[in-house]
Length: 125
Image 1 (cartoon, rainbow, N blue to C red):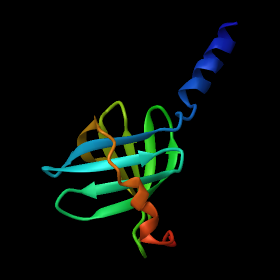
Image 2 (cartoon, rainbow, N blue to C red; image 1 turned 30 degrees about the vertical axis):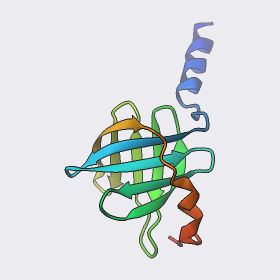
Image 3 (cartoon, one colour; image 1 turned 45 degrees about the vertical axis):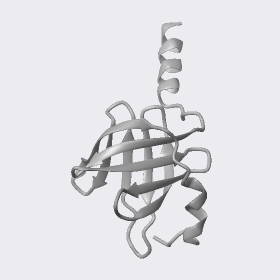
């Protein structure tokens, strides 16, 4: 019986999160940026306040993190991770993960996901 409980707990910990739309506001290099995610459509938008906006594609969602890539034409896709409990964005490179944005807090949903298709087709890797 104990073994079954442990297996069930492990399965729940790795279970995908339910579909949701959410916006977070993060501090990146002294400026605020917004990330808006649609986990059902696997799409996201990253807004740099006073700068550009970028679209991204969600690769994996769990209760602990959202893995995504920003889609830049002609550039390799680098994995980014929104760490829900740690309230930060981490970037994966050849040396491992490092923090790229901090103090990521829940924010009212921004109406930007409808612009995702305006960028045209997804660039090739």
